[in-house]
Length: 77
Image 1 (cartoon, rainbow, N blue to C red):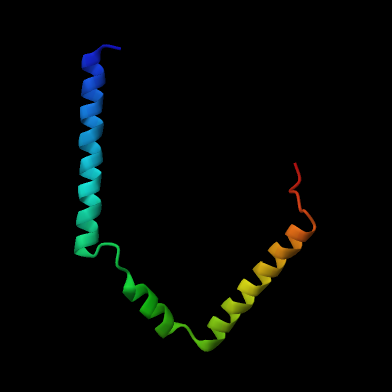
Image 2 (cartoon, helix red, strand yellow):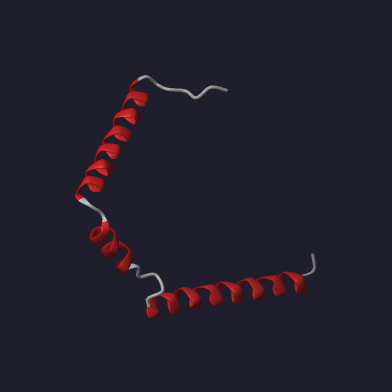
């Protein structure tokens, strides 16, 4: 490869990286990643029974994973 092509590739990649960084900073500054309403609505509209069911499901998942680790579970080929 010629040095001109390498220099052009470095310039373009640096420009695209800077553009991505600017987009990320803009998103952080304008609150694009803040999704507080999702969590508030989830807590507001979930009933106590649904939350208890979710806790039970999480406990079951943990128990299953623990049993698999104890048995040295290997998935079938």
